[in-house]
Length: 324
Length: 269
Image 1 (spheres, each protein chain N blue to C red):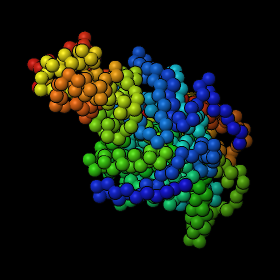
Image 2: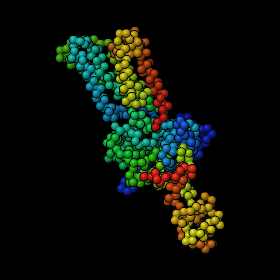
Image 3: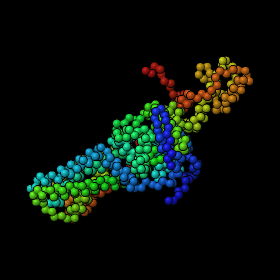
């Protein structure tokens, strides 16, 4: 078999980039669904693709998997456009819509078809059924399944060809809390053994608990991307002192930008180099006892998400009189 | 290689059979065609709807054979005639089975899975067409077998049936079944929606049969498949080749070509 060069249109593939999206754009009539979206996913990572409904997550995933044609840009999986992978299911397992299953087939029949398509033995069907905890329900028709069961079956289907990449659109939708905990550890385990995971979600908590890399998309554009830890750090440090006025003077004197934080505390902006070490040292030098100094962490991503997807200061705030 | 790892999370013991490390793409060859056909065969015959329909196809085939049996004075009592009636019975519903197989990916939205397993959509369609033809051929063989049983049984019961036989009639029967099935396949490939395909098939069939009335017969002889494939069924090829080909071009080749183009282009949502 001839070896194809991996270079395409001057884009050299960095080693280890299992998924790349380069300037993907897609329009539906006057609507811009996806606008110049670029990112990469590496082995061993779980990338969370976060955005409100209608932000362009699904369209992007469908362009990556060859189901939709981009108007501009291109995407690769394992170094090739998805549609040029010889047997894509052996490379990348996909679960793009768990409700898109033939209701008239049993769970096992659906997996047998997937096994036939990917050239896997029948024993593999039982393996993946066991892996997602669906062995007991495999004889039932999918029409009787809950959405959570369809998600599990869809994941089994994605896994059937021993892929090293998983591309999952809203995989936790419909799962109960136990199921969410389960899929989280499942994907972590998959990534820890060298797998690459790209999953989308509109739920912050889900992504925050599962992913280590984050891409936030809003109105078709990427508005933030990076390692989860960096993005959380970017949301600042909560600093509190018994004397708030003195703390305000201290940060101002130290040229540390800040904004008011919760309950009289201040939120120091860490993007300009303010670190806990530096604030602590400044406070000590000034003889000002701090009562709290911590990353804005827990709620940080939510604030980040809300601020990034905020329609902007020009948009009218919700009118309380109209809220029922 | 698989390294099973057992993870316990909140009472869910799981073995995770995932690849230990990313495998290079080059080691996987393309999905071979026979594999695609095997998958399509499972899809076409594996649903409850398809099984009921196939059972109904068996019943209409037997029903077709009842006609020469029950009306010995009105229907020619030859082996070829029995076979033709079986063929007519067989093809009442067989195209519906095939339309179902062709449209299910879109109506049930499984195209999303199928086209990520094999993104070369033309190959998937080719496998579906091969499967559909295989099902029709199997149906033709079964109908032939049933006809032989019925004819033999009727003779044993004292019925006089001319057993004279010729190859054009037998070949015509097989080609008739395949062509009629191909209409179903082509409509399904083009229309993508099960209900629309079935309704269009029957409405068009009804409209075309109007061309049997004397004033329109001349047109019907070129476009009405009930007429042209009737010649095929009875092995009356001679002098009708161009008419059979024209109606096939119109109702099989053109919709199938358009359907292939549409399937390759259509966005999966």
